[in-house]
Image 1 (tube, rainbow, N blue to C red):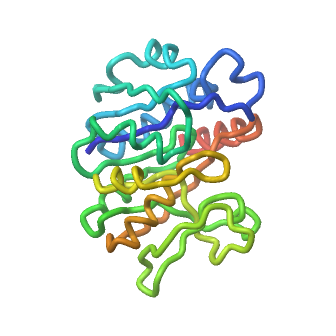
Image 2: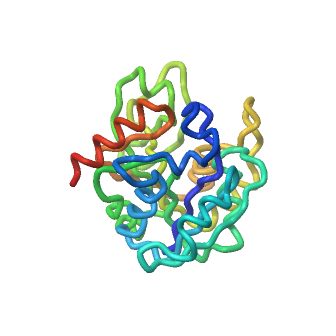
Length: 235
């Protein structure tokens, strides 16, 4: 299974940490953030890494080269960072079949392999976690039916209908590219992957959920410290 990893952004909220290097080079427990992401996808069974690069792309290519732990890497340039839906579209010519998508700034303590293993039971699989109502207002909230199947995803709702949220890890069918092509930009000018998943669900695809373990989405210097603690605790 291919793995698509968006790693094009600068990470402006990290301040001086990304003045001269990509966000994915920030040190987490002695290794670049992106190395942890690569390791998670390889452990889950990825046989090719399709990495979406942009800001300081050359540094990423020079650091990781053509392979990671024996798994080939393909780099795809995203000239404008217009959201995860747009990033996914850049990978379309290089993806064959269902693929694993893992956000390039997420550090997981455990494996995401259960999401891959569940792919045969639904058209798409979302790794999810429960959060507080306050946190739910800052991310993608998942709505489900009585069977636990996804009926939609709402980004940053003022009044969340649930506290089940996305974690930046999906297993997606090739149909997602058509859904992403239909997206309209948000008020911030971004094309939301979560909205594309909602389009698939409304078109009749089944999307299942799998509970993810502990994870840190690295956006701030404080998140770097939390991610490092998470990784060290998992060793």
